[in-house]
Amino acid sequence: MTTLREALKSQDFALTAKLSMAPGQSAHDLVQDARLLATAVDAIQVPDNAHARPHISSIAAAALITREGIDPVIHMNCRDRNRVAVQSDLLGAQALGVSNVLLMRGNSLPADHLPRTTNVFDLSAIDLVATAAAIRDNVALAGGKLPDGPELYVGAVATAFRPNDDWQPEKLLTKADAGAQFIQLQVCMDAKIIEAYAAKLVAAKLTWRFQVLAALAVFESGDAARAWKKKRPDAVIPRTVIDRLDNADNPQQEGIAICAELLAALKKIPGIAGADLNTSGETAAILTAIDTSGVRGA
View: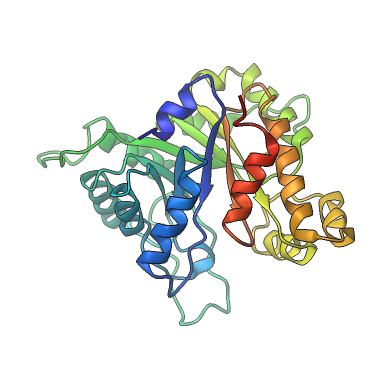
């Protein structure tokens, strides 16, 4: 089994894909989607109750797909857990053979969320990274016995933007100091913005300390792209992308073409070690975008 760690540290362009998880999804369907995606990517990313919609836990889902010989990346947020739950879940994931964790603050619950639920935020995003790194480095839980399991590979998130000349990646430096080993960007459908952002990370020599995954999405329509942007305000989806989808005779094919073009462009950007692929539609669209892009060609 190829692991995310191996793929990101190789000279090749690493690929991951995110499972589209939803309330009521069965374990069988989840595994089937993971098997399909694993034919074209190095690891499968497992969301953590995105948009505050409960589904099979990311740890349980990761355990299911690990049995299939697939390397999972579990997402974990600060919104839904206090410090004890964070430590317990990290140890539990490790005991189940999961090594990759992508850690984030998580968006606050919407005001109209029902049933009424409390944001936790016992830890900051930096605290969460530091906690995982302490478990990885065997300096956590004094007096306790850590479970047998793989060494954690700790990731954190960031948002790409077009930086000015004076900008320095201080927050990413803090995440690296806390123990982050890879950084995953929010969805950005503008290769020039990613290139400008990555150039700053290269100049600061941060790419010597962690690998960077960009993130793209395959949209099935202009409406799907607008909905994505509304739910994920950090996503960068230019008007030109939405216009192409709106004006296309076949929006689904256009969405695949847009993602494939961007994927091919990302492979050429110094400092970008790979990409995570998402979709608003059918899982198979991700496979088609990868095939069309040629990034896994000879």
